[in-house]
Length: 312
Length: 312
Image (cartoon, rainbow over all chains, first blue to last red):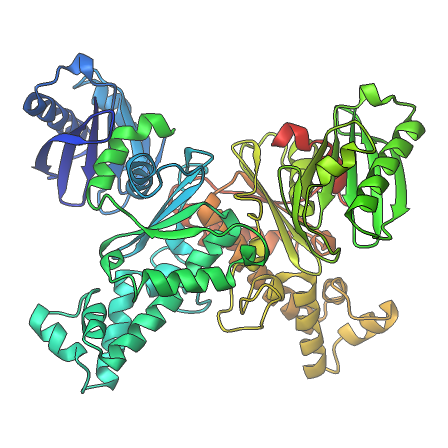
């Protein structure tokens, strides 16, 4: 048995995970951050709660894994985004409250590990997950192991696809995630709505109460030309970074995760696959990378955190 | 002992290489391509010639390695650029003429292997070489092994840094190598010369007989403002792709090779290091990638081909 903990900006969610990657018990608690020491204690208490709920003794658990929004190296948090921690030896702090090894991974890296063992990356040797949310996260499995460089690698959202473009939080201008994340898609959708008051995008957005990542796909499904054009343009933005990754790393598969990836195949995955097949370097005689959808949804983080010990 | 063969567009060059990576004998022959069978025979004859010159018996040679301009997978050539070969089982053909294992590598990958064992990549775990020539080549050492994806990975020149820009031979538009290779630098230099007839770039180009990759650096060394601006702009183009690679793979070091890399530090390496330190994702608390110059020059290909057996 393993325990995986997904550390979100507002909640901690722990799962007891078996060897096959099935989540057999789940516990949650609010983050309520009050310093590294209290944070380590919360993780330990949550791990104990999920063991109790699953009826499993500490001796039957190989390790606890935690997916952290930020950069980690071995058992240390280098820095986190949204939670104020820098250079915190979290694995050591954790041991004061629970005598189990705590392994740390970046949250997108945990999603990659989960999909690699139990989802879209099964059977591959080299695999990339790209998660399309507020930003773009990425996780790399290379030679069957999680790859993080010196702890902060895999930041695929911070490829520049529009030099001199929008200033990104990271300090560069024109990062891929500004254009091809859900946020980027919403910008494209709003711009098209401003130019096309007749478009069904307005109706769909009004029904949902807001312009969202899915708005363009929903209106495109109704045959709206403006929405179809937004979807095509978005796939082009997405393809820029995906093909960069394929040309550098040529993995067997790239999986798309996050809310946007739920879009209908004919509007997202199929045109993306076509662009990759046409433009990637290997199209001239090499092997083609498969572009697929992630399979585990929100569970990927917990399953991957639990499986970290098998990936590092 | 090892034998490394550098397969160029017009010549084959073989070196006998000892365990420490020193080239102890060299032989050359024109390529004169007459089909895969004759090509395999030429490689075998060249290997025999370099063994004879070095006074070494076949039994003392562990393997022959060949650096190929194109994509390879195991002992097979998938395709070559400039030489008409596709899906050629070269290692098998080679054995008909010489009973030694022939290992194949892409030429830029061999340069990476050479620098990793004997040059700028010594002591690293993750290392990237970027060669600035007619195009931009790249080789990746990840987790101490040569990384090629499914045989055609490491095509770092085909990151797009200018979407919708110049059409590249690879089929994409705006590839990094169109802007940041020696060719890209020459384009920038010529454009600046057309706008600035007073610039010392004209004098330097006339003295060298042509506008070359080094022209801008030479005129900049004389204090020419136009040339200094060309150098600054070129470093920005170079930084776009280097920072992309650092954000994705965060290696300990990126080494620049090829003729352009010989430019004075204060015009090339130092401003590039500054841009990387300021803009790479890890600058916020992670570890910084070193940006260095490749050390082995033209020997990297032979040494790396010879050492392929230790890298794959």
